[in-house]
Length: 506
Image 1 (cartoon, helix red, strand yellow):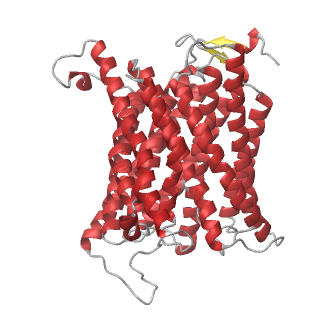
Image 2 (cartoon, helix red, strand yellow):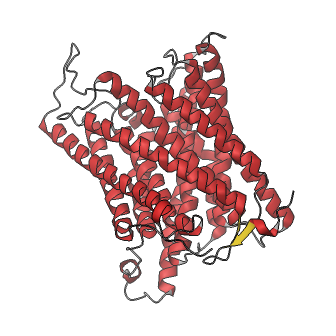
């Protein structure tokens, strides 16, 4: 069914046609994502105050419960709800076309919301103290697994709506030339998402049947292999979506255009083909996979995805530099960098996200993902240090930066508290730099990644890591509190903009 002209509005800033049903779904998914970000941030504050040994806020039971909730709220719910908004924006809005099936979009939201709510309630009730990985034979209530399945099915529906919209745009010729690079990147993220979410379904459906007493327990090794096709690969969705957002923010903030789009598109294809291979570093001590297989995956094939990230790492800053030099900032080697719009929170979020992901997250990912180092590092705090650099400094901050454009362009509201908005990316991003670095330092001393108490106060064997580690964790705790304040400021700005922000003419 074709959309009527009344269902569209033209954005006065970009000139893009915005389909009303798509706009409503973008708003709904984005707001829900921010709610889960707030929940995950509050929970994260309790965790960092527990790992800060001098404070040690939570007891062991609530620590593991909050760790489970933090993983689901931040790694899954916040990210994928926001990515659904990005998929609808990158298809219907950027391609000037109607959303293929708005009813299916609302089905996506309903399924994801119900699934996420079930999972959160089950964790808070103490029915699913199995942490993010939920390895068998650890058993949660069957409703927990059902919630994950419902959420995954909803996200699959959203990806199918996205691809359907691409077909509509092609058929109705709503754009000319090649597909925009941002849309191409979003398509790469959606392809990875389908692979990931199918893994989630085939992992949790038999696990749900086991928890409900309908089937025997899945083999533990098979569970681990299937789970990490979902658990780690879900973060690869974030990487592809984050890079697409980088290109979009470069265009929106300074008018950046990639120097060679064909190379950028090739890098996204490398993500599709090889980025999921990184999941294997979770399985290096598993006996079911041969040593040759592990060496090739963690030593050769993985680096084809690394090559893709290196291409983007050069392409995005180069596009920004060229755009700023075209504006006349050509004195010396770095005038363009000095005169960049650092007061624009979307640009500062882009810069901090790109550098943090590239140096803290990317380099450590390559190092910790190799077989020899991973055996030593995997169960220490070096790994949370790495993925807080990728998922929080990288993806979360990039999504925050995009929000400062989504609010006026989609919600038609001027950003509230603009002075706070200018400092928010710096407070959040730089504090998370410190959190990630101090986590990695603690892991270098052997501090374990999931232990409620690192020194073993209530265990037969106690460990004294010394004053250096205590000081390091104190710095981590202070930086974690500052990062939570930065995240809270973002949530306050977003909510205040929706409630009291000055309306922008459509």
